[in-house]
Image (cartoon, rainbow, N blue to C red; front, top):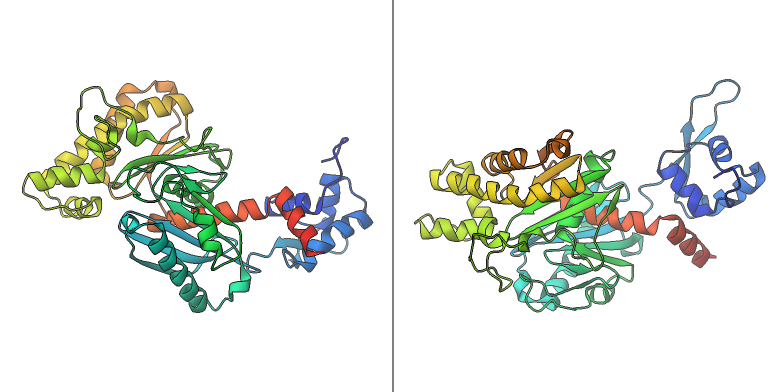
Length: 389
């Protein structure tokens, strides 16, 4: 921030510490060019708010070792939820993404937003009690939903598998119980953000494909979710295949999700005499080595690989991660077969095709990360500090 840049605000100083670019007052002065007295004035609100903490000492090249500045990840908590079609996971996390209390249980998205969100609020209250944290310590709420989201308003837009949710004010509903900022995003987006921030922070272009009841993708570029113009980026489940007329839940024919999703495979297995009511049940058959499930999963992986060939050639990601119910060996093998056969060698030269590392926690981890990155961004942090005065 030297060389004619505007003087660093408190929020910008916080970002430097959180990002690891500066660990001491001296390092902050070197990066920003601020005088010692001005730096102290800008740091004071952060220390008073409890957002920064002086802890231990950093290494020294001579003289008295400088005191380290660290982001106080325990000064507040985030409530996070990952809603799926028939179940949900909720958690209380600290600002570093560590879960303090978690709950998973049946919660049917088709029951509608009022019933689901009321139950979710009850879960959140119980989790805070389990974690030993008070409602006043909650700084924000993050919610992942299995449908397209207009991120600016937090409202779901024409979701194929969320009847009754179109345009519903999710933020406003949850704020009746917790008067804090509420951020809502698509589940694949937040799973991608969770996995990328936790295990692959150095990957500049990261794609996660969730294959469960439906199929969706989340894209993280330079540490931020890419959503497109109105939240439609990554909706690969509704790309139409030229050789299929299978009817999709969206009402169209030939969608990838109608052919290769966990829901599609469940229907095909059931027709073959192997009962499977969901993608989760398909996964159980796969883990048991059921031949019919293995064959269909391999075929489905190849079909998804066809679409991902275009995704990989367009985005040139460093990591392509497969997550969800079908994130297992046979499906992923099918993806790799088609992808490496059809994609340009240059697009796959440095590509890693992996399965998720966070499992069912990816969505809640991503939802919490979204909230923290928003609330402690320089602009938002400065606004919140000003409101405390």
